[in-house]
Length: 427
Image (cartoon, rainbow, N blue to C red; front, side, top):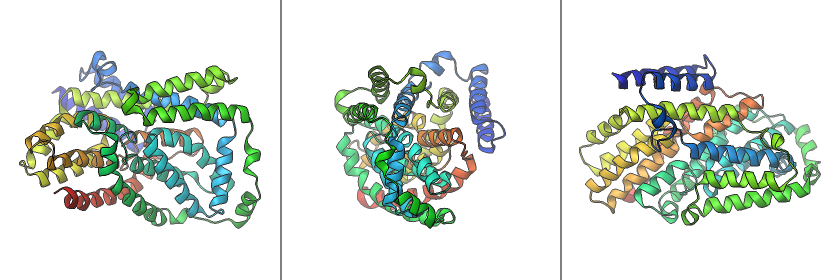
């Protein structure tokens, strides 16, 4: 009975988020509160359990990087990058979008997709303002590019870290098995952007001429603060990449970086936290509690096991079913708790199909499905939620369906391309 009630609460909250009848933060918090009220979860599971509670690593990673971005914003570096990007694109909107997409994808592979969108979004607003372009389409493609690019490496997308830990996979394993297809997917995605967003590519020669006449170096307001900030950011990035060696969680690295930056510079604490997206952090907390309740009541586990049983132990059928099921479920619930729930089941499936060897394809199916499925809806991946929060804060709200109508198309195409890759390479 409790499981059915939990499903009903989750679907109701999700419907409110999708239809935007009430603010998404209110819907997520209300849903989380009701889950606690009906005992679908409890305080211990919601706040302290690693698998069914709030993922504090995600929350504090966001918090730390938001503080660092807030300090960086005061240096003028985002204005510098905006002018630089606009000049390299010669004011042409599609060229600019391609440039921003490539930068986002590469940065997401080296860092993680959430950090990347936090850094690239301020640049996007400024360059779009300079060229009189709507920022929403550029922000949407950046969120999607971050999810696709982040799939290439172990540190690029949080689900990959969970999969690597459970399966004993290395950084190089992800490069060898995930990165080749990600490159192809990015090329296809860039082509799709030309078609999906063509009505927004309005070239203004006067605006372009004004931008070309600007000197980007004049945008730097505080060179000393810039060098201090870049030094700390570089250390944070190195620590992210060296996660498999240092064994410091990205959240710890981000908080340490934020603390050092505020301590060694003249920036006041109030100014440092001014850019923190508190509604986004609270939304994540509520979403994690709701999804955790579905995990706690066994709903997600039963769905995953039923999907696995339907394939009757056939490796090829299991792989394709896992790929598409992961994409579908990651579109509805955040892909981080989904992968945390599904990874023990996949580990059993791998062992049941002969252990390490051909059965390893199941891990790559899970990774591709979860990472790329996150693009399908506005709440499918952490980067999407962050982008929507930043957009709303800057007066350019992106609705659930504005994001999702593009995300569904991109997800179907990218997942479809995974099918021949997995089949031909592994099966």
